[in-house]
Image 1 (cartoon, rainbow, N blue to C red):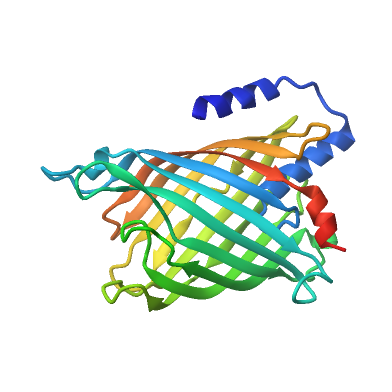
Image 2: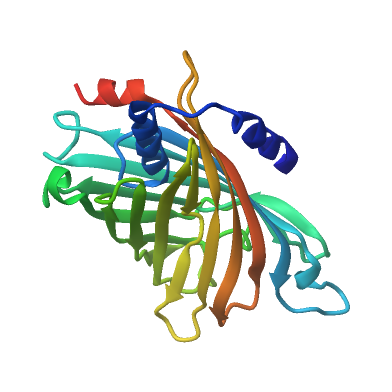
Length: 290
C-alpha cells in the first residue's frame, strides 16, 4: 500500500509549471485539505503504520516488538446557512477507526475502535477576508463502539471543542483543534473515568507546483486525572494535490511521526508512518449552501 501511494505521488509530480491562477487554486486546495475548519466537503482515509512501540517486554509477549496499525476514515460535513441549525457555518466531523491492538495470547488483532465526533460552529468574526483568522467552537463526543476492551475506553464522553486557524499568509496555514471530552457513563463498572485534553496541531506550507509540506496527523493528549497518560507526538511530511477534469480534487500525503514525550503511557507508538488520501466534493458544498 505504501509503495502504491508513493508511486502515484511520483508519477503525478511530473506535471508542468502552472500559471498564476492555477497556482493559487492549488494553494487553496492545500489549505482546504489540511484545514479542519474548511467548508469543503471531503473524506480522509489514513493509515498509520507503527513499526516500533514503547511497552513492556515479558517472556509471554514483547509489546515493543509488535507492528501495529490504525486505519482512520474521517468525513467532514459542512452545513452552511440557511441549512445549518444555527446562523453560523456548522462543521460535523466523525472519526471511525480500525485499530491493531496487542493480543493476550501474543501477537496482535484488529478491532473496531471508539467513534469520535465534533460539531463546531465557525464564528463570523473576526472577518476572515481581512484577517485570515477562523475560529470555531462547539461540542465534542466519544461513543464507546469498540469491539474489545483494549481497543476503546468504554466510556460515553462529551466536552467542549475549540478550533483556530490562520490563513493570512499566502501559501501558509497554521492552527489547531482542541477538544476535552469528559466521561459521564460507562459500559462496565471496571472502566476508569476519562478527562483528556486533546490538541490536533495543523500546518500546511506550499512548496512548489502541486507539492506542499504538511503536519496534521499528530494528536497531543494530556490526561487531567492523576497518573493519566500524556503523549506529545510530532509529525511532518509532504502532500500533493491532484486535479483532473471530471474527477473530484484529491490529495495524497505521506508523513512521519515520532513520540517526542510520554508520561504514564505504558504502551505508546514510538515511530509511525502516516499515509493517506483526501477526496473533496465541491458540488456538495454548493448543494448544502443553498
